[in-house]
Image (cartoon, rainbow, N blue to C red; front, side, top):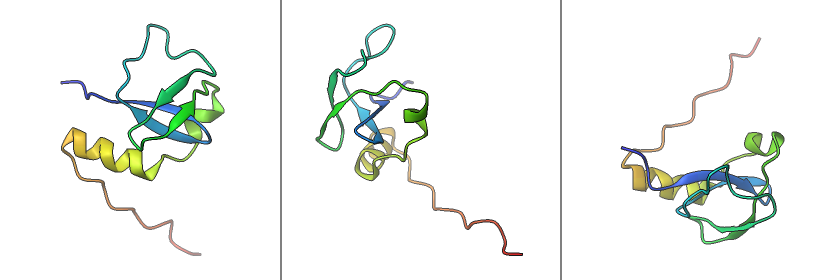
Length: 79
């Protein structure tokens, strides 16, 4: 079953929104309300998808999905 949210980069982070995505995606520079309560300006650039995830959107998205947030794994071993 699909989740009720979708991820969308904007304002320097990857955010999640409940707003239905139009066919072809949200137009660049449109405004979208996110799970963290912010209004973001959509950024559809390739680099935007590599931005860090908004922690509040991530927390709420995991709650909506009914899945816990995975613990952070340690970095690579030191040489």
